[in-house]
Amino acid sequence: METAHVTGAHDPASDAAGTASGGGARLGRPPLTERRKAATRLEIAREAVRLFADRGVAATTAEEIAAAAGISQRTLWRYTSSKELCVRPLLTYALDFVIALMRSWPRDRPLVEAVAGTPSTRPAASADTDADALRDLVLLTRSEPGLRAVWLQVHHDAEPAFAAVIAERTGCGADDIEPRVQATLLNGALRIAVEQWAWSADPQPASLSRTIHRALGIARSGFSH
Image (cartoon, rainbow, N blue to C red; front, top):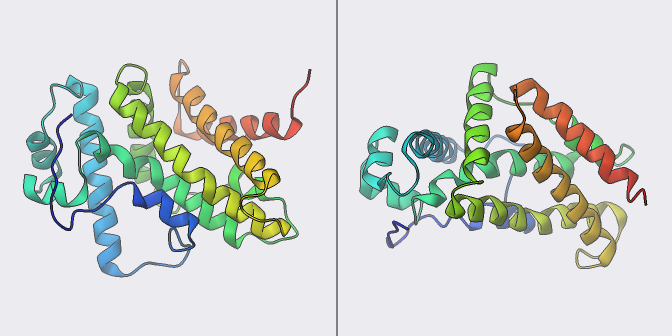
């Protein structure tokens, strides 16, 4: 695994974890500097996935990822600590937005509506591009252990944030069993839905929301046997 340790480097593991403390994803528009950094992280992620899909993780260097993203290798290491973690923002973007939307969702409406009907805040062309990159990345998790680890870690980190939102709405503690189990069901449904969509014969960006809606319905129905 190609890694670098740079003083002041961005810690990708803090992205999703920050949402659980209330300081993470927001619906409000962040400052310009934060938006630029987020845009750079996404561009790095897109280029990393493109290169990984083309030649594999082992055959792709950090220097190549940096060049494709239009930055220096030194700048790349300010945003990530390994080439596998370059892809993390592509995965956390949607989860962070869902968590922020859940926090602001009206209390008289089911939270599942917020998740199932999450709108895109980006232009259609950009959303479709990221859907394609997400599909390629999830496909790669089948054969690239390092990327699979990132995929699973992102969902693991998001689970406490889901539990915190559910607990706040129900009056439970975030560590109580009910919000934790509900958060696990929600998180698992989202992960499996994206995998099912990416691994299908003809994954179209528009079909992702339908797959998520179906997975959430299965989760809500509970065990049938």
